[in-house]
Length: 115
Image (cartoon, rainbow, N blue to C red; front, side):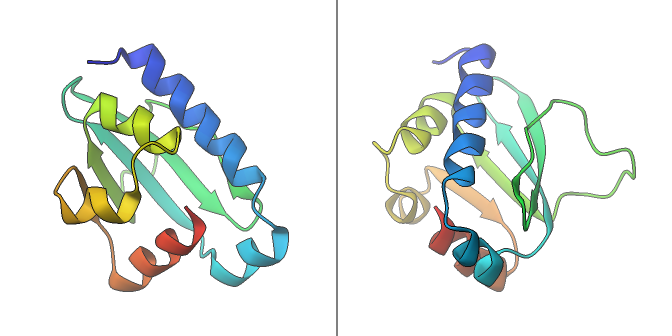
């Protein structure tokens, strides 16, 4: 089991990876959304925001508006790190139940194109 700090570091790497996506691809596929990532084995949730400019850094502080996230991910710590490191394929992880996503179908398609 990875630590909370290792998960924070992995999410920071994910933000950096998102910045590397071509600006035209982001403009084509990104719709502004709030994102939560619940790491179930650590009982911690990280919150971020997806914008046309990229992915904002994740924090453990929920948004002040109190609204639930538009895209909710649930994953265990080791799988989060493997996913960010490219060792775990998102589609396989979804089909195998290792990652759970609560989002609209359109958001799922957009997310798949960007990761």
